[in-house]
Image 1 (cartoon, rainbow, N blue to C red):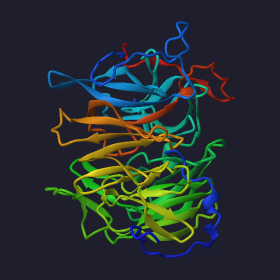
Image 2: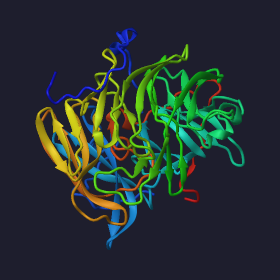
Image 3: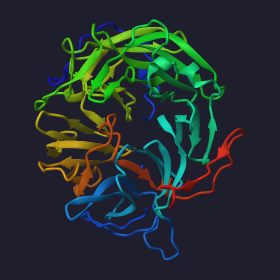
Image 4: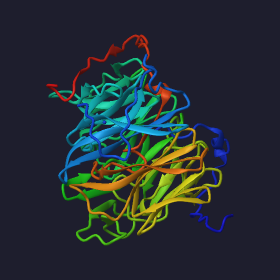
Length: 486
């Protein structure tokens, strides 16, 4: 074993998981403008124009990021910037601008040249060639995106939420379940629970509280069949941490994710007290929250959705979690699940041995390491970058490129930070600075590094194509100008 590898206490060796290493792992877990603020601002077309200027190439890759556009020291608007990587270099241009775009903005993915995202509960599509933005639906409260499909609890005007599916490929939607919301999410839950979709798109899973006399920190696993819309409540109950903030309670239930289409991994809280209170004075390197009776005791477990049986795998190392921590990282090419444990960094789940192992890998030979005063990015044994913070990192789908945001020691500009957007390619071995930008630092309480500002896009995703006919029971989108009145 590598001397730098730390093994966490083994609870049980799961012999029935011997085949798990070959199974599919976790499912994939926002007005036009031409502001010029970056190092590059070259214009290019997204379609094969008759002029022949910069036609799309399947060998080119793209990514998109969000920046603030300061005027006289004030961040006036935010812009989405599209960057194109070619064999000869890179090009970039802003494609969409709006005031405060970064607030509660969740980019999802690109299909047929349109970027889909959720902004303050509104499902939006943005044409990356024209910059035209359209509202597709509103009232989105909890959602999960996988393989160009979005599944969401959608609150109706004056009513309860319903469960809806959206298909970006067909530009269509349908309601999944006609069951009353109070039946599938008890009122005691206090909010719309986070969703996870199985890799085969057959089951939506979520955890929620019960209206019965069950302790408030206990959450029940519930499932909805996507095609039939049928609902079932499991006998699986899991303890979860609650966060008491200055604005009230945040209780999203336990962190969980799909291991395969029949199995969930979940982190249960086995502490005597399940509340973390906001600290008044936060010291450097310290979490904003602290458990009332010491560090929480959390255990990683496996749940079989057919039987509801839950089996412990390993204890997590103790740490003070922030809101949304720990969380499962999307598995990369090795199909092995990983857990991010706040300031402790990332751990790989060794299902065969029933243990957690420190593992900084983020895909394709790249690794990311956290420290109390600096964060570093590496390719194999080669150092790429270090900074006070590297809040965003994204490895390309083929594992041959990585793009990241590195933040130096600079004071914020109304919540934004002057940062460098940098990219590394395995082919050339070069690290290049794309731009020096003011990057918004405020998202929402559930925003997490690796899941926000930087999004890789393929040339295939950018090519417009004819819409496919939606399946029976699906309705076409009815796009409206966004924001309303435009």
